[in-house]
Image 1 (cartoon, rainbow, N blue to C red):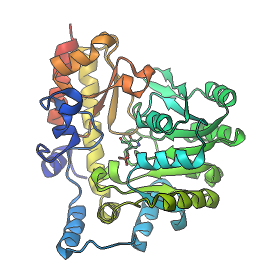
Image 2 (spheres, rainbow, N blue to C red):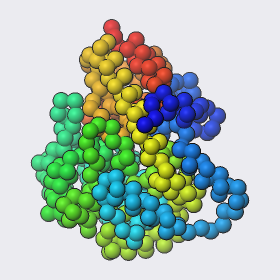
Image 3 (cartoon, rainbow, N blue to C red):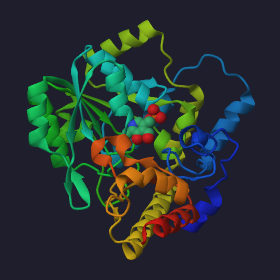
Image 4 (cartoon, rainbow, N blue to C red):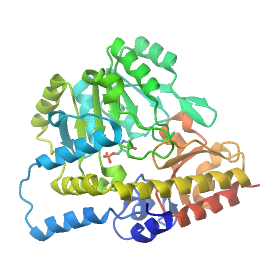
Length: 394
Ligand SMILES: Cc1ncc(COP(=O)(O)O)c(C=O)c1O
């Protein structure tokens, strides 16, 4: 297994002047490009060599005419899902899109009507709120319940709100960004069963499913009770978060239900919408075929960065709480006891010189928190931790 030091030496790269949103586009949000960026959820690491080689072969061929998705792509994606997670996916269930958020927006349009109620758990990745509101659907939220330094779903509240608001669609984040939960089989089954009984369609955003940091095993909504809830479920994911491929615009929409697929195909035909990119597919196929060891290396870096942040904040500033991280490479940190939530942005940006996502962006329950991207070098995490401690120790 590749060590943290070797992984960083081999893959970490300076991303300045590459039109990176995180590094070169910071000024749009933060007014400067001089902060240490730990915000956008991509990584500072080059892709596995096999991915670069596959892309080079295609680039050297030099022709980018109309292309189809090769059978080998479906095979390798289904194999990855089956062997690593026991998720059985059939070739004909899969469609492609340019990104998971685009898929969410498309699915909201296909599966609901204007003014229908769509439910999410908060705090959550903010585009969930956006795709619901911007498509003129009613946003219904249920707050995750805090349980020590973790969170759980409030099933009773979810049930009451589904019934009261006649919810038509539920969008779940699994694993959950930003709170870092990898949902247990029992929790997912209870939620899926509730949605089935209440006739609520279910979208499972599983883009973070390869980023399992703790000891839990990831379980897809598609495999709960041997696939019992498949007909009611659409799963969306991508190799982009795992292997740092977001700009190559290739993601999956997995629809076991043939009627849902028919509606999806009809809608996409009407839009004449693009279905991913061949460059993105070449990269993802090579990553699924050869990237397992690289992924283990990345996860070790994330674990080590998480431990460093947690231990040091605990030691020097125990009132700053780093929440449990079961999945994703995003740490969820409660600073409300050490920085007045009203002053949080000022202290983090102007004093600690960090660019992070502020918790309030993920819903009101996130006020006073920050989300820290750990998929970076240990040196960056050390610098960020030191800068934070300097600001909050006294
Ligand atoms: C839960 C979740 N879904 C989707 C995305 C973005 O996916 P895409 O870039 O494919 O739209 C992210 C990125 O952080 C995410 O955390």
